[in-house]
Image 1 (tube, helix red, strand yellow):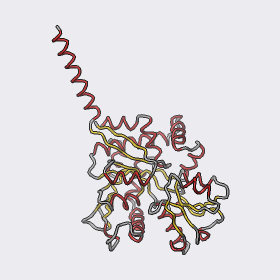
Image 2: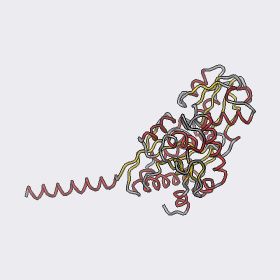
Image 3: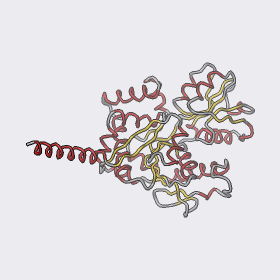
Image 4: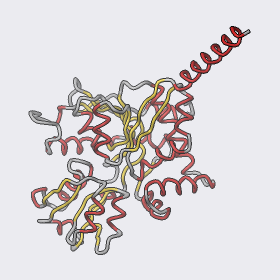
Length: 349
């Protein structure tokens, strides 16, 4: 009798362990940091949407919030994460330059005023001349600044850059009586709320150039890519609906980002979100993306972001959905792939 009970217990235990393992599958870590266009990832995790899609494809996904944006990309590049939320420029200058073959899996939005230059005691870009400017050096903030200076017949030599973490930039601006910063939301809105702050330039002046994306290792399994895309567009459908659930989602994202609901809605207005996969596919396959990446790689090379000894901007190859490549065809490390977004648009996930 005891033997029978023991064997039954053993059988149940083995089945339980096997089932648990099968349900979990391979687990993948995904990094993100606070930004208006990336708050949906936090919502997807908190509400179980991400877990649901992961289970559908027999894997596990752990979404990890990294408060320092650049550090999140460095961790991705070092191999700590399989995917990471980042911009198009940072995908090129950090993981791609670091030898990590990466794919832009989801084009979530482009900044349309979500990145900006704010200063005290000045009202135009020309008023930045001779000033100290705090920013995350060599990030999209740096890119935005260079574009603003160039459009106003100025160069980087006209200002002094002070490399500053995005986690500290708003507080430092508030305490500086003659402050000038380049940053993104939510810190951008925090700086604009400081007495005497003036927005002198923002990303709406260069629409489509600062792209916010989910980037994955190119050799990551299709299951991870499908799960991420599926979860993302489920959240997009919720956010863009007219139902009560949309308002609740916005409220949750606002709270998680440290903003009020009104502030978060204002940030969304300066974020050109692609709420449907079809919109994202159209943008990713468009000719303007190639022009943008030409700007980006030229800036990156001129700033020395391709590393010492690199003699031209063709060092890294960048591949587009149509198969065309700019740069070195034998060293393609950044790829724009619309195929998974296309599957989502066809309702086949």
